[in-house]
Amino acid sequence: MSSAPRIACRLTTPEQAHRLEELRNGLFAGAVSVEERHNGYAFSFTGTDSNASALLDFVGFERQCCPFLTFSLILSPEPEPIVLSLTGDSSVIAFVRDTFVALTPTQPTGSFSS
Image (tube, rainbow, N blue to C red; front, side):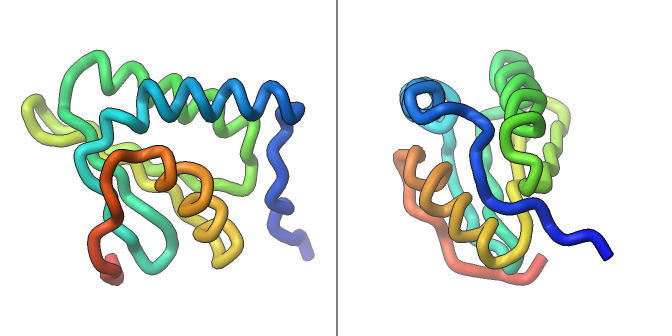
């Protein structure tokens, strides 16, 4: 029986601090909304090509760094928002809230069960 990967970043402490600062001032600063879900959070971004590219890069990097996260990226035709969902078990939800939601300029909206 396989267990879920433990919550631990594969970056060193200085690398992690630098990465979070990049995300705070870049990608996540552009989040237009955050929704709490039963299994994680959904972040909405404007539907630009530059955001699509940045989000694909983010998912590619973070898949290697944080193997405990499950990623969903919905890319609708422009100008519809791009939605990035970060999900997992209860410890993952707390990690996403403390790490990524904290980087956004907005507070999460209410919880729902989609």
